[in-house]
Image 1: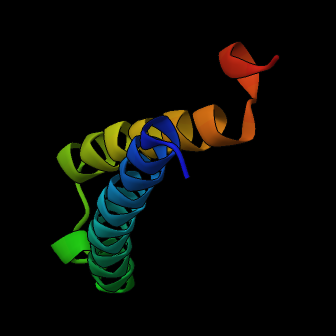
Image 2: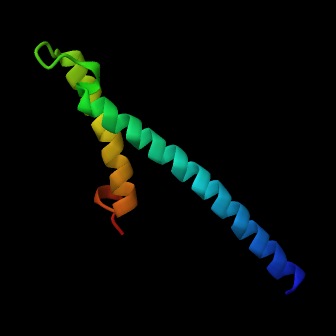
Length: 78
C-alpha cells in the first residue's frame, strides 16, 4: 500500500467514525421527536391554540425540507 493509499484509507475511516456519530445523534433526535409527537408535543388536544399549530407547521416544514433534500424532491430534484 502506498503512502497515498494509506492516507486515503485513514481518511475514509475517520469519515465513517464521524458519520456514525452524527447518525447516532440523528437517531436519538428522531426518537425524542417520536415520543414528543405521541404526547402531542405537550399540547392539550382539548385546548390547542394557534400558537401550537404554528409551531408544528414550522417544525413540519423543516422536516419536509430535510426529506426533500434526501429524496431529491421539489427544489432538490435532479
